[in-house]
Length: 253
Image (tube, rainbow, N blue to C red; front, top):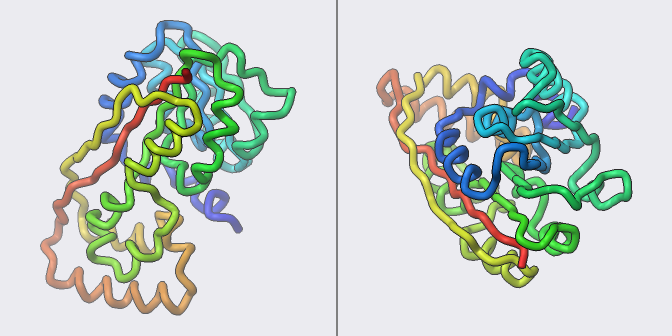
């Protein structure tokens, strides 16, 4: 079973929303009421659906996972089938499927690529730029390599930083996007305080909350998990640390 098929039903409860307000603030700069937000690899719509509701945006959401899309559709159904004042358009397929003739892109004001850059590599950007309208925008939300290394698991779970080779640092993303015909509009790093019961965090690790854990062999994971359990025995009942991310916005020249 794939990571997303396995995690879909619990994905929303496992991921925080600390950066929602910052995302809304940033997205509002590059959209107007009724603008179309196209969420690439949008998963359950955990991030894009609340943004579109708050800002009155039209949402189109693309994902390759049937299980993740099912959760997103259920979420929209609970909103009465309407998000931001309009029905949501769902697309099934991987990121590259947007380049076929069945997906219309000449009306999209803002593309978002949130928490997915480690699943869809930066080599995707030049092809996306080719279909973006002039003066449209691309928003990337991610965690950098350095931020991942500084995270609680990055510093406390054996191999978590070194195993995760799919992330990019901010300057790598900016360089690739600018070479592809985008202009940097803004780039900021964010840090949010987080408090988690250590038993909750341990359960999330045991259930392989992050796809990074799938990069371990079973023996490597069990060895690291044993080490992590031992580390937690000396920690307080509630763990306090910073959760970091970066938000970058680019404009099509």
